[in-house]
Structures are given as C-alpha cells and as structure tokens.
Length: 319
Image 1 (cartoon, rainbow, N blue to C red):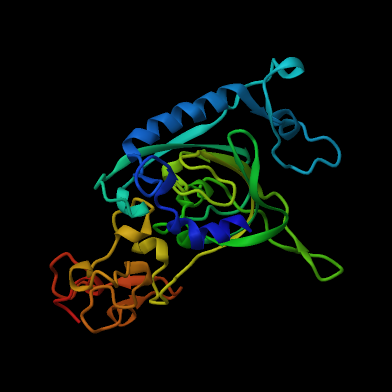
Image 2: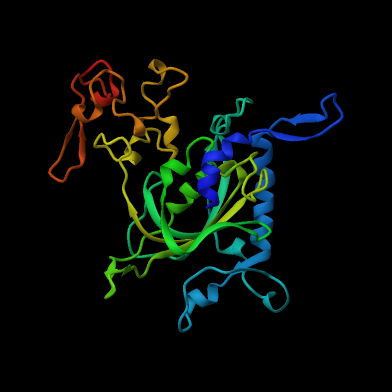
C-alpha cells in the first residue's frame, strides 16, 4: 500500500537530483519554499474544483443499489450543466513550517488551505486529528490518476502517525476530522459485521500538507492530493499510555501533535519526544500518570499543586 510505504520512505527523497553540466554530471536542486508553492497549489486546486463535479444527484436521491461512493468527473459535454465542486466544498486553513519536511530555510507558520466535501454526514461521532480511524479510501492526483487506495476492505489509520514530520500525509489527518462515523456495528449471520449510515466525502489539500518535495509511489513533487473517504468507526488514542487522550496533549490547539513538547529544552537534539508520546511530559522523574487524577468515568483531572497556573504534569517544579 503506497501510503504505508511513503510513510517510511518519503523522508529519503528530500532533494531532487537531475542531470547537469558540472564536473560530476549531477546538479542538486534545492527544495522550493513552502510560501512559494502553497499559493500555486491553491490555484491548481481551485481550477480543478471549478472544472469538476461529483455524483451529487445520486447522493441526493439514491437509486436502488447505490453504493454511496463518490465519483468525480469533468464538467463537459453532457455534464456541462453540473454544479462544480468549487460551489459545494468548504475550506479550512492550517499553518505549516519547514521543520515538518526537514527543510533548512527556516520558514514558519505558512498558511495552507485545504478543501473538503461532506457528501453524507454520518450519524456517529467526529474523530480528532490524533485518533485512529477505520476507513475505505482512494487517493488520486489532480489528473485523476489513482496512486493508492483501500476501496473494498476498510483499514485502520492512526491519524497522529501519518501527520508526523517526514510522513507526508498531514492533510489526511486534518481532513478526516470533518466526517462522522456510522452507526453501531451490526453482527451478520456469518460472523462478520457491517456499519450503516457512515460518513462519506472527499478532501483535497496542497503539497505542504502532503509529501511536498518528495516523490514516491506515483506522487509527483509539489503535487496537491485528493482523497475520497468512507468513515466507519474510530478509536480515541492515548499513544503513551499516560491516561491523557492524545488530542488533549495538543497544547497549542493547532491539531499538529509534534510541536507540543514541554521538556524540549531538557531533551537532546537526537531524542525529542512530543508530549503525546512522552510518559513523563515535564521530565521531572515522575510519570505523567502519577501527576494527574481521574474522575469516575476515567477522564483525566489535572492538578495544580503549587497554584502557579501550570498543571503538575507539565510543571517540573512539582512532582
């Protein structure tokens, strides 16, 4: 599966190499700037959204046997009267920094806009960017070439893992939060289970939320990506087992879990552990789990023993 392979290898292609005229016959091409590529990608995305539509009429009035899957086509010929995606999508903006791709130009907080479409909302709950989701999906480029997918059997995706620096699919993580899961699982006579009324939609994001300057598995450099998704279920995560759901360790609330590291100054350059992966967030020698309490339903309750406005598990002065 391409996404899983990219997650491992996307960081290996951080510079493009092409033939040149120097003594070695090789010219190293430095990565482009995030601030330069983002607006170009947005123009490409808006052009695509203006000239394509999805099978919205089938979702509005489902025919017998409809599989509730999104089909994208060009507005042309007999489809010239279709409503373009641009008039049906919503958008959101997140910021991206050069460190997410191990770039050396130092750019920080560059705005990147992504677009999403909810074709069927679903009846369950919304996952967060930190959760694990059970989905069917298909990934395509703007020329509608499929580069990845699991369209028959759903698989689990850890949204925190795939948004990690050099992983290349933060856009998938932020996109999934806009869809709801289906109803309770139905046990079938053969022992399998099914889910009804699950969320269906698509999202499209710039390369700064994808693999950016890397190229692998049929994904070109600096390419915006499209995903169609069907969300069946999700599990809330606690990656470090400290009793705090991973999304609650996103201290700055930007949905990106890897820039929240309370004890960063005490950690070495070769071992930087974000809070949601760190069993001792403040590095005071007392595990985070031992510096919090839990209510009757198992939810974390945070202490502030010295009353300084900093919770104990984030305050190295209390343990």
